[in-house]
Image 1: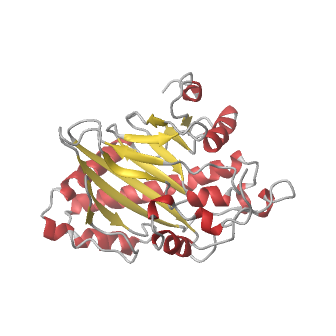
Image 2: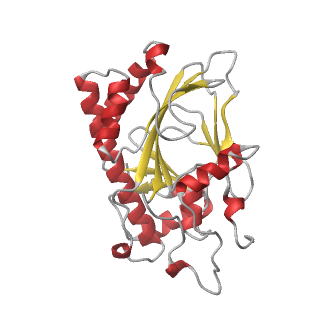
Length: 307
C-alpha cells in the first residue's frame, strides 16, 4: 500500500489506516488520534502472512459446513461462548489460544484434518504475536515505556462467525450495536457489512473491505486501561449482499492473573483514575448479568464521570 494512502482516511470520513512497517514517526501520532477519535483503525503491512489469512478463512468456511451435531461439540470454559446460532449468523469459539492444549482441544472437538490443524495452530500463534505488537505500539503512542508493560501470555480467544444473509435479509442487522469486551479486537474479514459509529456525530461509517488488512477495534478494556484516552468503538454488522460473510475476530482479553487498570503514568490531577480496577472475568459477569449485555459494563466500574 502506498504511503500516501496511509492515514489519509482520517480526512475522508472513513477508517484510518496504519502501516505497521512505518512506525514510529508520524504514524505514532496518527495511531493515537485514530484510537482517540475513532476507536479503531485498519492495519496494513502487518506480520500475519496474507496466504495464512486466506488459508484460515478457508478452514473456517469448511468448519461451518460441518453437520450441526459436530459443530455443537464446540464448547469452552468461557461462559456465553462456544457454538451458537443467532438470527442471521452462527459462531464458534476457540478460547485461550496462547495455550497449545486449548487449540488442540478445539481441533479435537471438530475432528479437523491434519492440514486444518496446522493452519489453525499457525494462525493462532500469528494473531497472538500481532496483538502483542499492537499493544506495544499503543503504549508507545501514549508516550509510555514499553519495557514497563508486558503483554506476553495474556488470554486471548478467537470467535469465528458466518453470516447467512439472503435477498430478504439484506440491510437487516446481523449483530446489534455493541462495544467489545477486550483490550483490542483484531478482525479479519473481506466482505462488506461492518459499520462503526463515529464518536462525535453518532453516524455509522461503513468499514469497506481492504484485502490483506486487519481491522483493529479498541474494546472496553482498552478504554479503561488508557484511562479514557482511547475510545471503545461502537459497531454493528448489517447485510450488504446476499452472500455468506465469514469473519474471524481475535479478542485480546487481559492479564491471566491480574487486573485491568490504568498505569500510574496515565493518572494525575488533570486525569484522575476513571475506573475501578477489575479482572476480565468480573467484567464479563457484570456485562452478561445486565438486562442489555450489548451495552457493556464500563458504567458499572466508573469512578469519575467522563466529560
